[in-house]
Length: 48
Image (cartoon, rainbow, N blue to C red; front, side, top):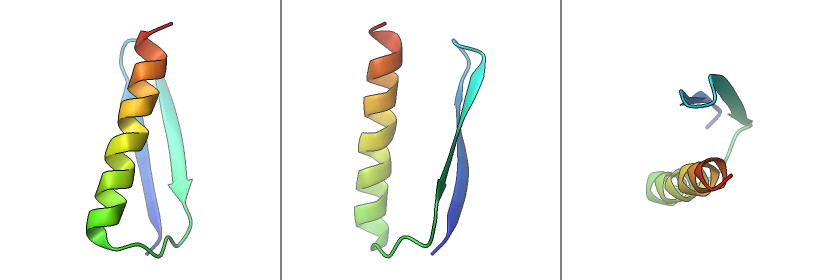
């Protein structure tokens, strides 16, 4: 499973491009990972 996706941050007017190369995870594990990844990044951005 190779995934290419963008996380847009309007507040900073920037785009975080993240590419995961052939991640071998189940759908649920991946969505949990993605949710945590997104949450951590938003937390870092908005606590600056």
